[in-house]
Length: 266
Image 1 (cartoon, rainbow, N blue to C red):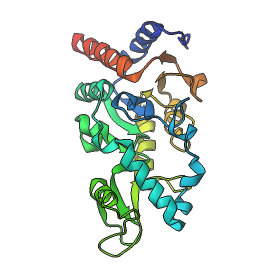
Image 2 (image 1 turned 45 degrees about the vertical axis):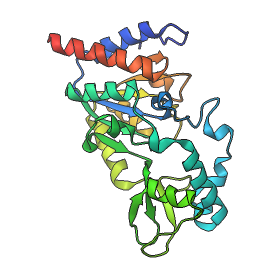
Image 3 (image 1 turned 180 degrees about the horizontal axis):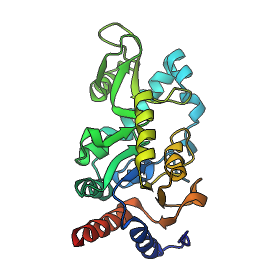
């Protein structure tokens, strides 16, 4: 296992270490968290200035959302203020499209709900969204799905707790709330990808949210190498083969560029 590089300015050594580890890997699974989208203006959740330092997550559990109109009103207002619908992919998202095109990447398994991997150019089949997608809402009664932008337009017009226009049921952002069950199909697919991977590159995740973090753990258990790219320590640093300290928007393009260059030489 390579020595970790936590010091500022130490990312070059980490990238070189990662390039050596990934040189012969052809089934790379990428695992992303909020840190891959911060350069797109979307705040993370668990960092020093994350969303949950300002808002109590216990107020936004699935049961409270279903039971309390006030929770739903606050939730939709937070969505409107987040800017997530207008966010654009950053250099890290675009670099992962290049990795996909190199045919060395199995897929991206993401904890993010912003849809930026697809917006950057990854096909839908290449992205597994473990926590849903905030760009759409779902009726909890008839399961009709509608664009979140349409729902937020109703909120802006004064309908602060918008109901389904088809059946009158509760509309919920199509994301996994606290207490809510993970989507079965996506979770199963992520675990199958983990079994098939010969390497995992985790980007911008504290790797402390379960069951999502079982994906890289399962890959390591089946023999995959683990490369972690993050600003700050993660819960799985002790499992990593190397770790790169730095912002995803700077580190990932350099890492992918190195991998693609080395692929072309072969």
